Amino acid sequence: MGFPVHRPRRLRRSELIRALVRETDLSPGDLIIPLFVCPGKRVRREIPSMPGQYNLSVDEAVAEAQEARSLGVPAVLLFGIPEAKDARASGAYDAHGTVQEAASAIKKEVHNILVITDVCLCEYTDHGHCGVVQEEEILNDPTLDLLAKTAVSQARAGADIVAPSDMMDGRVAAIRKALDAAGLDQVPILSYAAKYASGFYGPFREAAQSTPKFGDRRSHQMDPANAREALREAQLDIEEGADIVMVKPALPYLDVIYRVRQAVNVPVAAFHVSGEYAMVAAAANNGWIDRERVVMESLHAIRRAGADLIVTYFAKEAARLLKR
Ligand code: PBG
Ligand code: ZN
Image (cartoon, rainbow, N blue to C red; front, side, top):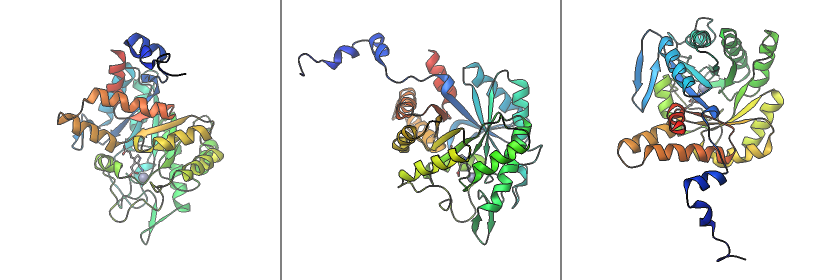
């Protein structure tokens, strides 16, 4: 039995009734805001390819975290730009590194906030790769020790959750073991389980100054043509001890978010990445799209696909729109 008995438009006639039957909800409490922390004081330097996003010194990162928290955003994800880079990524596991200082300052000064730290080496290596490099090859096992040291040092500095983004095999197990051995068995791991080798990270690499000096990240990040493999990556990470698994980027990979959500029983996160932000910002700045509509539509789509949490540069903006 179809028309004229069935008229789906009946449930679309007013905002009240649309809200009553809405299937997907979005709240500031689902959002995580990424912050790029840099050395110095009172630094707030706009990232050219990400208008409205900044490199922030620790004091400014505290202010930004405070503002996000007051809008209802419960968590920040920290990326660090070190004072100096070297082949062993020393800045990543320096007890007084940029991220460590920011984590401890935010925990001290902002009430009731979660600090998540990105665990990777590419911001800290002079060659810009995510691991130890030998003759232009990114070595897997020797990288694991450095990642584990990084995670432990971030958690000691106050990180509530560590988020490995490197895509080395076995990193979740190595990090879990090291955290437990350090008495940090209550610190969860949010693993970037299905992280694709994506062109959408371009603006991030400008912001984090982490563009590789040679080669690319295809020997560890996933092939954009694959989806089944994402399930395998997610399952392996969960077996190794991941508490939350993440898919990244978000909008070009909604099918992957959906499939991972069906396949696993842990919370699923999605990373709405820098290039996704840049495209919306650029088109909106040209007057070609309505920024607020596109932001809310994108975030609802990511939730509808099955993401429980969303890392997004639009976190503050979306929280403001949701309050209205
Ligand atoms: C580090 C890392 C990257 C992103 C998050 N962690 C960049 C990369 O893999 O080159 C990308 C985030 C974004 O584009 O917003 N490995
Ligand atoms: Zn990396």
